[in-house]
Length: 245
Image (cartoon, rainbow, N blue to C red; front, side, top):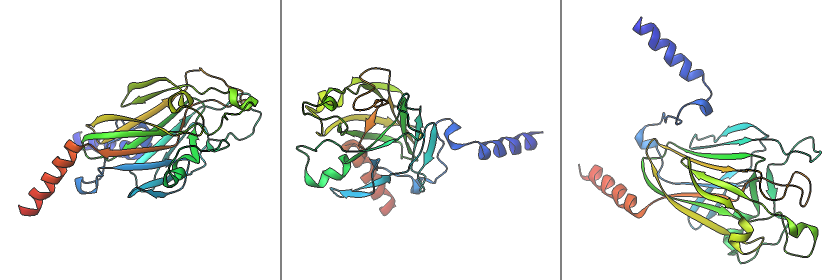
């Protein structure tokens, strides 16, 4: 009976979609687990300041789950944009406003962004357990700063990290001091189950029809996950211990 139950359980887990697994259990060995992660949301792979930002240019639709080919990160998108009259919604945005005060090397992170109608969630998978600095990169690239109708738009959303609300009614333009300007938000996060969860959620606030109907929802340009200084010292100690043991 126990053997039959074990076989049924193993078969069931293997055949369940990864997005339904609790806490995304890591199946990689400890040597294969990672201690940093960088994603260029909505853009191609780029190298910036010795960090390789993964490509996130997949044209996924509403209510979809996508996992990277290496299995180290994933994303899910929820919701359809209402009243825009389009047969196929756009979930990757390109800058229509000019970029300002952004270093030349960093512009590739802010030319594009990923958006969603309701909820946009990124998962860092198979991270070594420990303390990390999670930096979220934003720039409002849809609205403008001129005297046109496009300048009246307002994007407001919430941000959760590991299920904790860290940014309430976040307004990129307000925080960055204008459109086309970069702003980053960094938070220290403790990863315990090899999984990092970052969720951006639109709670119905802000405008919804500027510059066109269906223009709303969260937006993010890039994600950086790096070990904290304390964790770097710990990693260095573990490496030295293995080297001389």
